[in-house]
Length: 282
Ligand code: AMP
Image (cartoon, rainbow, N blue to C red; front, side, top):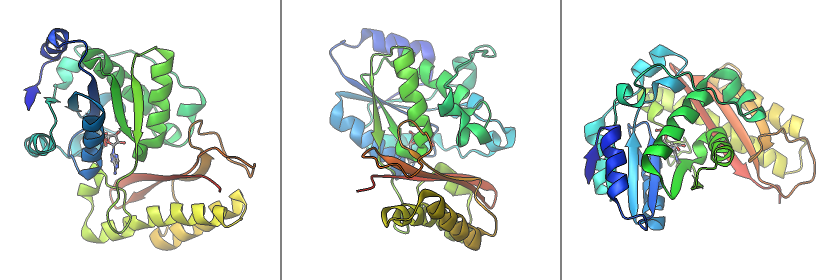
């Protein structure tokens, strides 16, 4: 596996690569787990060459403590990526990606005004800035993102269309522990007991989905979910929403064949977690 840590070296490398080689890009912030590796595997199936970026992007963190405490383990990440057949690991420094303070300003309308956008001001602006840069450096044919960050996929899909990036966004399913906890690098900061408590998030979204599929109204299904969450964690979730999976517009008991999603966020111990489930009514 090739390792590149400089932006100019990556651009030079891509320029000398044959343009018929299809490239799959998997952007990550490292501390890799099986969720990330499922994206690598998908990229390998669909492309000639797989690039994984490991970069803890400072511009998408509102909270400097969260940024500082974000788990980092590049040595182990490189090992896992190599074992899983990644062709190139790109691990730049923040100074190289952001040589001066960025004033880039993206706007995604409704997509950034709900859920994560409401609770993490500026987050999607930072995501869009770094992902645009990665797309320019790597010129991928396809870019792989996890449904774990459903709102992020919607924002990036919009970014690709708005700026005419010549690539396909591939949304990959959520990988969970046997008990149902969505894998996340942030889970590393949970104690064993907190990991047990964190199961409340997935239990809640599955409960809401099942209530809705069982014929309950949207508002009643959400209420059941909030009650379940509160009885597990003692506080209400930051949000628990029922939306259309692509537009993120609220679902209000219409008859539909479109994908719906139940999305949740909440704090367990010191860590803020998110999860979602995508499903159809019939
Ligand atoms: P992160 O390193 O958390 O920024 O994640 C990098 C990519 O991996 C994003 O596209 C995430 O949505 C995806 N990802 C994170 N956790 C999971 C998971 N449990 N299952 C599938 N994809 C995931």
